[in-house]
Amino acid sequence: MSEHADIDAAKAQFVGQVYDEQTLTFDAQKLAVYATACGESAARYTDPTHEDFQAPPTFPTSLHPGKRLPDGYPKFNGLGMDAGKAVSPIEPIRPGIPITARTHVHDIYTKTGRSGRMVFTVIRMELTDPDNTLLATADTSIVIREKPAS
Image (cartoon, rainbow, N blue to C red; front, side, top):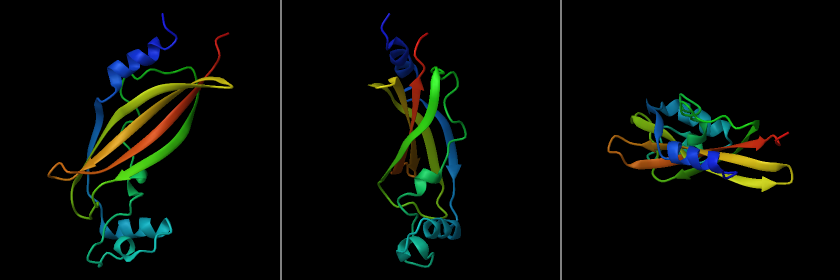
């Protein structure tokens, strides 16, 4: 059996399968508070009366799925850590518009470092508007540094 058989099986079973879906609506004042707290100064992000008011591009990183991982996701033997976040803003996120957030495992891959094999899971949340227009994607990467076999 291949060293990566567990990764291949996990990819086949989980990648691309939506495991969490939420409908969210954002309040203009809360978006402005978020933007200000992040150090944003552009009026289109901090002033709800601005004609082009919208959530700042980093806003999707503040959203979390209702479930961290899909049911039955394998538990890799090791220490788990946050491996980073990435946002791809595509269209503005506006207050008062219902947004659908769908979350799926986007990728599972390994790297080998000085301390051994590391398993990365990339969780992607896709945000769409009522017309199903993709507004943004937000990726969260999780890394498990596997414990060496004894």
